[in-house]
Image (cartoon, rainbow, N blue to C red; front, side, top):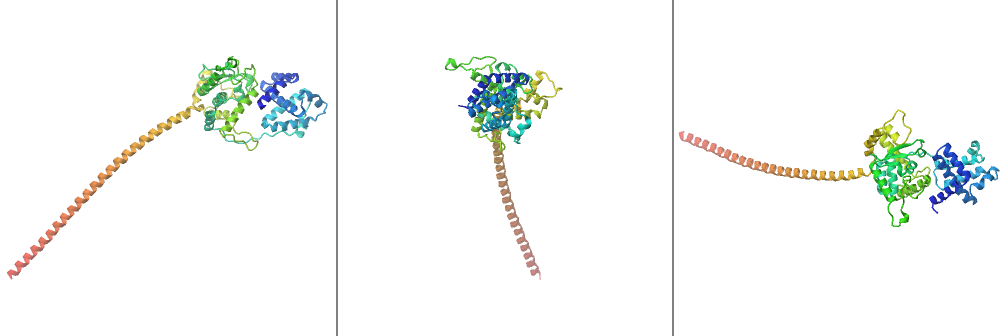
Length: 414
């Protein structure tokens, strides 16, 4: 039985327990839906743990815990060990434990903090410094992702920096494809701040989101498997459910993502806690870093942070801002442009080489002509010198003849 399916059964079982159902409804009303979902998930793990350990669920241990027939601290420690064996993050373990402790308190089963600290050892949340995800890594992930659902999901978080839970909560009616850029609304109960907000996604993300929606509602060979499109459908949910579990949906998408990282050999893990170094949140960090250097206020707004109360802009201004920054949040187009640039540069290099060859040929011709001219001049100079030597020789012998004739004449006169 797969982990996701097993957890789905546990979630359903715990939701059907009246005490737990009432507890979760109270949390929803007093805190938030996200807190209720986290507590629900923690109680589902607690239910699975108890069934594996004792053969019965949460209801069976409430009375024994009240009457202290079961050591509550020992039970919680065993539950922590169980969660650790499932390789859950320390942060998740702490959140689930909070849910279980709060529920037990409503059942008059108390775990006082001063005793809890000394008798229970919770996992430490380790903070490791790591290099941020760069554009090359994101491009590699997106280009090699074959799952249409995961690809659309990744393009959204890589172009808007949304949280995974926020993205998975999107319904068809929340998307405005008529807007340029595409606008997506988020309901208040699914945002961290508890406020309704909206964000924009890039044209690339829009394309892959439309591909996924078309694929999801495609006409199948067997009509009974066709999905009827309703505007309240959750975009990333595969099964037809009015209110799907975002936690299970997250697990399913996360498993696909981890399989992709394994395939790409990008499954590096932290030395401290053994967790993967690449997570969905890294895409959010990348988007923030990409935009904040140019406009911090807009980056804070896009990611849904509590920005300055003085920073207030009309919808059209925000649209223009996003369109201005969109080129920094594209991942496929830069590669296409890179290919075009490479081809253009190769042609430019070919032209430069051709021009260089012509210059070399011209230089060789010039050198040959220069050599020929030089040798001709040397030859003419040699001939000139020979003629001059011969002329000087003739003049020398002429002087000798003149002198001899003069001497002969003088002798005759004596």
